[in-house]
Length: 159
Image (cartoon, rainbow, N blue to C red):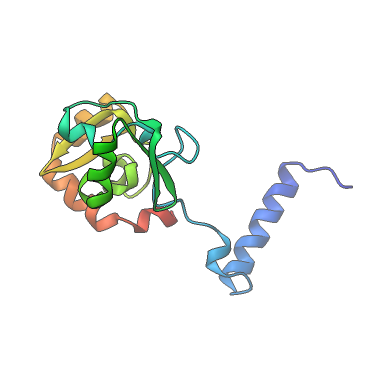
């Protein structure tokens, strides 16, 4: 079996790109990022935090596997059965915008992890950011960044 090195990797990558551009490989062969960010806890949205609690308790609260459900291919955890029921009744109200990816990153045309401890509710919508420094940058023009993010979402999942 041949060894796999940088040159082999570059050749394979270039060949795949050429094949895709010529239509030999469908664009779906290069999977887009998932619509819901689950990179902090594999398969779990908001790193296991209860998205409803941001609205009802004004802070991030750990959810429980005892109160969980699957929505849009991700597991969502809640701190109570009541919060789970509220989410089930209106997931669009409680789920973080941009699938929980960093709101600033999406506004700039790419994705980055959204941290459950770096959040803000704006116009009754939950937004997560990468870290406090990025959040400060996002806060300099929240309406502008939201407008840009809305324009970029969900196209950024294909970048």
